[in-house]
Length: 179
Image (cartoon, rainbow, N blue to C red; front, side):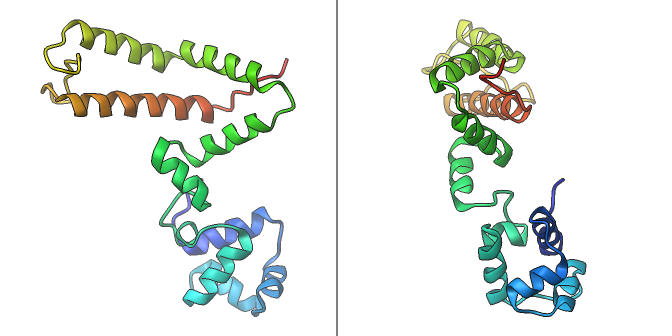
């Protein structure tokens, strides 16, 4: 479920923690009525309270305000570099905590990922571009409008497709290392 405003985010975080509005109000030293009004969008929050709520729930203020889909600064940094979604990052962290030998998990993951249909599609497209190369990067790629793109755009398009394939694969809930 995609949330995009502070009212929804406060309610979502409170419910995830199993708190009532009264319990949250006690934790934040405010009236229960204030929490109810925040969740209904009937009362604006001051910046100090936004910071206090974000710290209490362990999320960024950007997440709380609906400006980011990443709950933590670390996840936002990883997502910015890799293009991974919050769910993909969480699944990878969970995989890395498994009790099974990480080496075997990684090898199984790589084997399955290489067999994944979007990556197969990427490999076919890349080989086609490579066969018809006419520029310095060895790729001759058409965009959605049928226009040739330059080397940098071609690499960005292929990287984007790879990111999507990886996110789809990881978010699919595939579990490694289990019989």
